[in-house]
Image (cartoon, rainbow, N blue to C red):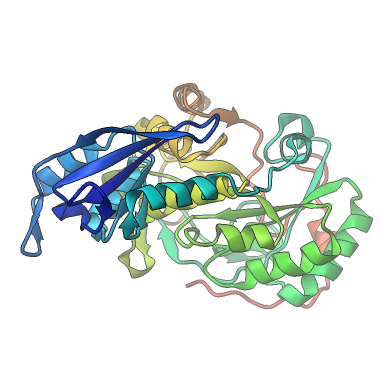
Length: 391
């Protein structure tokens, strides 16, 4: 692992990323946490009087190739996006370089939650081929709103459609433990309690509150979150404390041009791709297993699926699930991808990430064993459910 320090004197971090004369590089031995200095790296300063040269800024980011973490007193938004897309964690801190290095080594040595391999990989029907037709999952539809608008997404409240973004209504977090209790009676094979909508799970605080309540009563069940990733950065510790051990992030683009073809708006105009990759990295660092979902849209992102897999793999994801487009909303007239297109994308993406091939496009209130039993009507039928927002 390599740390880069923006510095003016070679001893202290006190410089803005774009105005640092050079960068001190420290390499940490992963085996015994010993460390040593590498030759410093220097590029022309890209920032002057509040302005920056984009070409020099990209050159500066490229000069830190191979580094995992950057320490600087300040990093601008554009540089932050470039750095995170290169897989470099950004830490805005000042202090003595040797002390910051020792502090970071203590962070690396911290006790981590390490998920039991059997729990996540063998008993999760959305991560494991072996568990797919044997273990059950329950989706709790507690998330009422979304913070982005994908051009293919059309959320609906009904009991007939079998696809993501659909539920019979919104469940209140305080009703979740009783719902889990009823679900386990209907399907004792359930190993996973997940939240996958119908809106985004982190657009409101409902999902984390629900996980806390459920984990308190059912700590043995795997808690799984599915999100578009916009609000994921900064949430890893909170999710881990709420019992979440596996996270699925839907990533449909690895570059801005492709993203604009997939998403019509993002709340606050935030950089969705940078947020997704940073969130994945934080969840992996917190000991969670991360899968990435990608909707294959012919003519939009079908030629860039491998780029998505490569970026997700660099961030630490361990599984990739490529889903065929369901033609609806703005893509209502777009043909579904062919089996050949899907297999081609899986082959190319498989060079970077292990491919999961058994997804069933589950509803946000699904219950039962995927592909074997559908018990959502029996579980939620007659229950008092709230309507949900389409915003």
